[in-house]
Length: 468
Ligand code: SAH
Ligand code: SF4
Ligand code: F3S
Image (cartoon, rainbow, N blue to C red; front, side):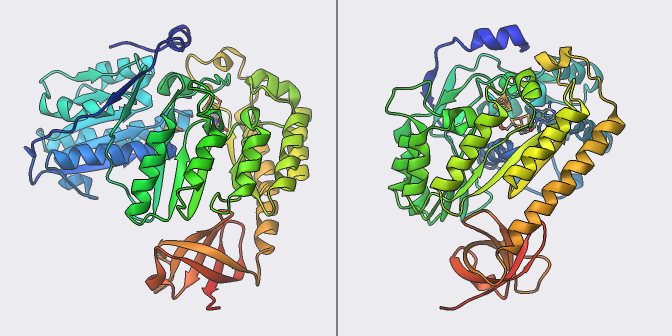
């Protein structure tokens, strides 16, 4: 087992990337056995769980939503903030209890948490009932680890991750929208963030491989793909010049898949070429998630974000001008070390200027081995919570304003699934990524329909199908 730390992660950044191909050859030796899979964290983890499902199904397992009836529990963990840890350990307690009743139960822990050195050690010392520990770089080893499950806890967390695998198979959650990984890892090393340590250095897939995956998905009837990466617009910086994100988006747009989205973009990597491509192709959705993190230049510098408030605002205005109707959402952290009331007011000021369509807001959480964790965490929890409340109030006001602009308008909605709240209802998303609950739409799931918006709330819209 190799434990990642800052130094090591930076050295790993220099490693050569190997492009390999998965071979899939499994016997369904666990036929009839059941697995329970719990996923924490971001879209990356949700998509990794789709890969995990493929391996478990190939071994003969079938999925159950009832953990008490399972023979195998897999927890796909997240390490981004401390509360992610707390939730995980709470759940692990339930698994321990279950194992007392059923000693044959296999418990496997994967994802971002075991990539941290302290977690791998804690799991080994304090939670010996966990059978298998695997990381984000060796998900494909899971079948082997389950088959070889030894008496002693089996820890396989790779930190040597200079690999990109093609021919990865998934059992996708949806038959309408699909996640497509375009790259792995992140080279930005924002001072607060654990991701470069848990996911490794940036490794981009080759453009032609991504395009053929999208073509396959289109053939299968998928209506939408979301290109995934921690830093999607840095795509290709580790490849040849022709394999840029702007070129990738162009090639994906030319497949004519109806809808293309991408997350997450970093302001630092947003080129004019890219803006031109987004505005040129109607199947690239006018929605951009563009985290700002803070409105204070002092804090942005301490965060290592590589842009100033002014540069962010220039980019923001360019996007609004060049991509008509674009909706922009963001991420904001409050209570970063040394954030004064004045710094926080600058964040509120930027929110007032940008009037984001939405924002994910977080209280700063120190993460082991990151540079920010060495800075004094000098703002009280009370103050952090108070800032978060004030920020959310403002953010929600603008979300509601934006949503109200949709009232009585007719918009295109891709219907994803049935809506629990309403009989025969279905929900879906506008091109600008607004959630819409649509009446009597159950028969149109999987289609893009015209919807008249009848009601607007902060986080969703209601509508009816409009036949034109
Ligand atoms: N790669 C993306 C998202 C990374 S994680 C990006 O760069 O924008 C999603 C969000 O979690 C971040 O944008 C940030 O706002 C938040 N986050 C990351 N580390 C955090 C920490 N230590 N404490 C609080 N929030 C954090
Ligand atoms: Fe983390 Fe920054 Fe990379 Fe986003 S860009 S994953 S916040 S290090
Ligand atoms: Fe969490 Fe790992 Fe994603 S830390 S946010 S699951 S990359």
